[in-house]
Amino acid sequence: MAAVIEDGDRPAPAVYHSSRRKLWLLLAGSVAFVAAGAAFLVAHSTVKMTVAGAVAVPFFGACAVVLGRRLGSGRPELVIDAGGLEHVSLGRFEWTEIAAVRLRVQQVRTTSQRFVELVLHDPDAYLARAPRLVRATAGMNLGLGFGPANIPVNTLPVTPEVLLATMKQHRPELVVAP
Image (cartoon, rainbow, N blue to C red; front, side, top):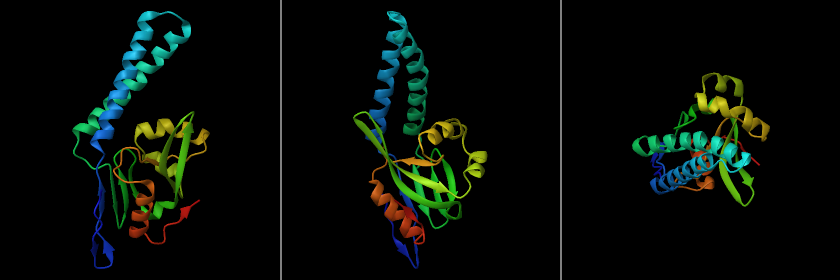
């Protein structure tokens, strides 16, 4: 959990490191799906299983690589300060770029994932400088009704509500959209 200490009128930066336990669990799940996908490819029992394996191995393999890098890095996942915020995957955002933030939930069957969406004044300007992975997934996010900048909270050590409150501490005029 990040400590936010008042320093005069400005709160100190809030620094959030990834939950190592959650990262290890996600890594184990990714490796398990790679193994299952490889088994589907080797079995060749049905076309569906072969296609599932062909999709699972590269996708979850890439997830495992990203998670492994994050486990090996000492870099914080999220830093919130007077100038804006910086996310390990999304990059840096100045407060002036953010029109609003909102808590979002993506429901997939029986599982849901909560995240904080950054509603940007100029999403195209962000996408022009965004990391390649963000640019690659932006179209999919748009198709699901989300913007390009979403902070997943499943690996953070705090709830989304705490995250929003911390953002408001650093930028009191920040709009929290419903």
